[in-house]
Structure formats: C-alpha cells, structure tokens
Length: 335
Image (cartoon, rainbow, N blue to C red; front, side, top):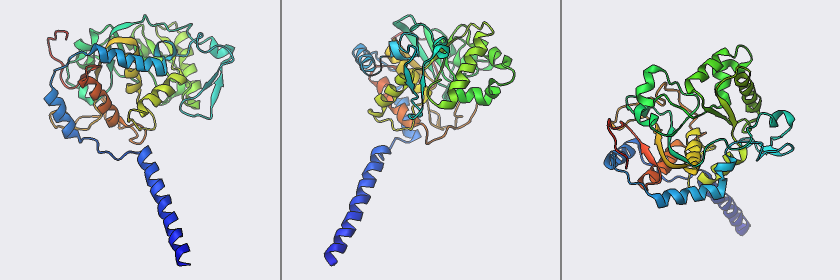
C-alpha cells in the first residue's frame, strides 16, 4: 500500500514537471533586459553601424528558403488560382476557396520592382516623436508604414510624408470607419495621405477580416483611388511566424512591424527601421507614449514586442539591418 501511494505521488510529480516544462517551452522564462538596460546599450552603441553584406545576403537566403517573400507576400492570380484553398493563418480551422469573385480582386503577380534598393520600415513607436527622422525616412527608395498612421503636418518632421506601402488591419476599418457600412468617403479621403501607394491587408488571417478587407477594396476601386489593394498571403504570414518563433519570438502573433521588417529583409538591398521601441521609457529615461500619435496600449499577451525588438537589435549589431532609435542626425553620410 505504501509503495502504491509512493508511486501515485511520483506520478503526480512527474505530471507536474511535464506541465512545467511545457509551460517553459511555450512561455520561456529567460529574463529580458529591463527598459533601462536596453536604453543604456543603445546609447553605448551610438550611431555606429557597419553594413554586413554577408549577413544581409544570408538572412535574405533564409527568408527566401522558408517564406519566398518575392513570390508569396501577397495573394496574386499567379500563386492563388481559382479553386485554391487559402487557409487562414490566424484561425486554422477556417479557409476560403478562391472563386471568380475573389480571384478578380487579386493583382496578377508581384507588382514590386525587385530588388528594392534602400527601404525604410516605419513603426509607430513614441520614440519617433521629436526624432526629426522625417527627412531621413523620405530619402529612402521604398517606404513601408504600419496600420494607417497619421501623416499630418504636425508629424512630418518626425515621420516624413512619402509612402509606398502601408498596412491596414481590418480592426482599424471596423473601429475608425464603422466597418464601411455607412459613408465610405472618410476612408477614401484618409487614404489620400499615402499617395499612389499599396495598401496591404490581411484579408485571409481572421474570418471577420475577409469581408472588411474586400469592402475596403471596393471602396477604393469604386472611387478610382490611386491606392492599389494587396491582400497579404496567409501562407507567407504563417511561414514568417514560424521563422521567428524558431528564433525565440514567442508571442501569440507577430506584430505588423516585424512582418514588414521580414518582408523588407527579403526584398530590399538595404533596410533601415524607424520607430521600433516597445518600452515605456525613452533613451533619456523619461516616459514616452506607446505610439507617436497616441498612448493606446496593445494587448500584452498578443504580441511579444520586447522579444521582437531584441531580435531586431541583434540584426542591427550584426550589420544585417539598421535601426534608428532616438534622434536622426541633421546631416548624414551613407555608411
């Protein structure tokens, strides 16, 4: 009886240990640096950055092998013919079979002139406020922005004015433009800030987002807008997610910013990232807002932004991409 009781307790402890190990695998407990520690390291690094062409080529090769961004970043007529099943990357039990109606909305193939040369990926971090990075950003050959950020005159000096590709989460269409069920004019008018660019929407990530994304497409096409709609390919989003998870990013889903940086690293000869700073304290140890335009915080359990930042900072230190954190120099020579 005593032996049986002992074995029973041992089984319970074994089960608990297994559970703890599984938890550590999903949610690792290594300690991320504190805000102040990260700020101190960034300050020590200063503006020093040495381009590492070998690292750039190697990282592009890895992304090409896993995710094929040049061909797969958007849903096209070439990679998604009629009858193809598009499995939603955010809801694995939902899918969409490409039919005549959706096929007609897809671009023929990748519309970007590859390879792109100097690319700027602009996040929305509060670190951009008073950064004076606008001129630096606008000098890039191809500029990517996240989630329809404001580009009004009050922000121009810090974030620039030019845009070539901007993402739009369906939730933004829902909240800011009332699902486009009433007047669509405010949505179409707001898109004028991005000029003749591409709007990149994850139509096939979550089921509710499909109709919203298609509605946005029609709102633009029916008004002869200069904006071209691109639907993010769920296969690309899924493989990029796996790529970063294997490198230590354990969020439920990657942030839009990291998706865009991944796209840029796969398509561009040189990448500079701006506004990527997920911490509540700036380099001067003063509080900063979450975004350069507001302080609305994300769901902390959805993204692992500090982990993402440390991955990008590692790439910066290795010369694979350049990160601008803090103020941009008034006069800058190319490295």
